[in-house]
Length: 95
Image (cartoon, rainbow, N blue to C red):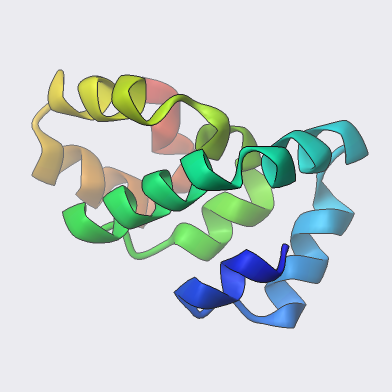
């Protein structure tokens, strides 16, 4: 998961991702790194500040196809949804 360091993700967070998630999910995550990169970049561009927490506790969100993820966010008021996610990562369940 070295590619996560491009986004300032630390070794500690990478370790926590591995510990808190099923090995099969982590494997899928690693195999989908191009899509993961796009999703992280999208989250950064819309102002999501809790990317590290999402990586640790909601890794599956990064496996959603980028185009589908964007459309899901656009079906809501993006600033409102971003605020909710930044306050509580469980708000991603609204997607």
